[in-house]
Amino acid sequence: MTTTDDRAVTTPDTTLSGRDAYRDELPKDVAGGRPEAGTGTHPVAPAGERPEAPAGERRAPVAGTVPATDERRTATTATAPLPDERPVTLSGRDAYRDELTRLAASDDTIVCLEADLGGKGHPFQAAHPERFLNLGIAEGAMVDMAAGLAAGGHKPFVSTFAPFAALRAAESLKLTLGYLAAGVTVVAPYAGVSGAWFGTTHHCLEDLAILRSVPGVTIAAPYGDAEMRAVVREAARSGRPHYIRTGRNATYESLAPLGDELPLVNWEFRAGDREGREGWDAVCLVSVGEEGTRLALAARRAAPGTAHAHLVYLDHEHLTGAAAELARHHSRFVVVEEHRGQGGVAEALALLLPACEVRSVSADRSWPSQGGDHEEVMAALGLDLPAVLDALDAFARTTS
Image (cartoon, rainbow, N blue to C red):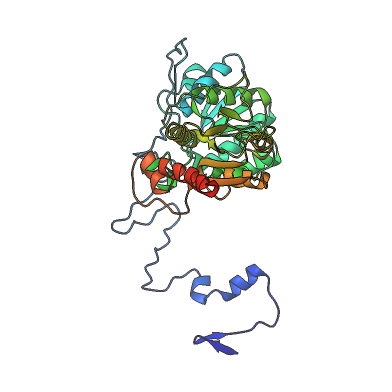
């Protein structure tokens, strides 16, 4: 027996596995599940009860109840007919609901599942109540049910907040979208920090890192009403597993595509050509998602000659093709995305474009500690227009 820092350490006679070594190393009072007196540890409540919260601490609502300040409210059946005219511009999540409702009118295999996000006016519930399922706050179970519906010949579209889809239900997504390759589409509003003052529980800056690591999943981050509708139509047509991220209530006019289908790269402005070398060394903005595109367009207004390439599809297969096209026209890129730099699109493009320079304007590694609106929370994470312009200036300084 030896002593280290006044603690007796016993060397075991045999080498233990990691988990057995962990169990052996636990102090007896912890291993027995009995906290020391005076440590401030919360007591464990009997089954079916919840311990009282300490003074000044708020408890999350019990599963099955509806948070008072959240938008996750129980849907109610409505019978009002849908208007015939198509709305001019809707937010991403409302454009999804509207487009899916219209597609379901001519395709009775489409089913809509929501995790207590239906609200009082969900258009799909109003038009097709027999194919609308509100599963409550049970995101993993919802995805599992969608897998079964897909196996039965349906086209399930499920929707819940991005943090609850990509993080809470991550295992179900891996198995349903990846391993089973089920034709399930997951639509995830509240991506990035669009939840703003709802706080970190309702933020999701990690979903692309998770979903991009699952083979076989088509990942999209549309900008504006028209792009969202096009992505939803393609998901319904293809029957492939999809993950579609969007924001909260922001409305944007989509960039005009070059054709009827969404291209791998939508060039809002192209300045270079590798073949002729003219402008090939010019910096190109690459925008991802709603807020990345908003900031890239703002930077274009501040620096009108800057090239801008917009990406909708972000999975490995689509990005591989997009990277090849980007490299034919430019060699230096500033990627703007509402995501962590780690596991984001900039990191992926840097690996796919080893001969090019790729810089990232994304959320930093801090956690928002104060409330604010969407843009204020983004700015606190280093994701704003000055950051984009600084990245462009940094490239300009290296060539001056």
